[in-house]
Length: 169
Image: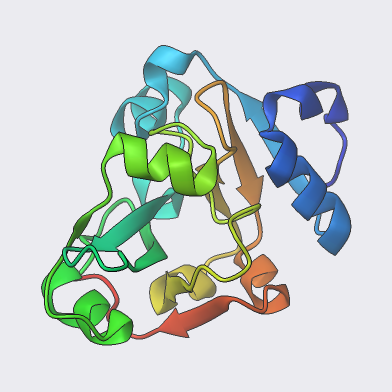
């Protein structure tokens, strides 16, 4: 895994490309048909195992003054424990999945392409511990035209990332 396919670099969201350049972690860009950007469809069409595909999910507090957000990265084969783990981590009473509009406003990324790279510096990032045991994972690339294959060790280089046991069930 390296930067061998940087001809596809234009498929990365600009903030994602800049962030990955900054930290210097090798990655591979996987160009895809945007119709298959959702994880299950992507895995089936392109032959990647769901157990190595991770979703970046933006969570919002229900209270609006101000709304608090976080990003969570979990394997596609698990479910984010929103009502227990995430709520406790955010220290709020009620949470929900951010809607497409909130997600775009916060990250500048489209639903189906959100990735943990290039997010606002002050946005907490929680990574399910199961991810850290893998050699590589597939993540969004910031848009619906690509995914990226990268080592989960990248999270060790990200100051905002915290590995959490049982973030997902």
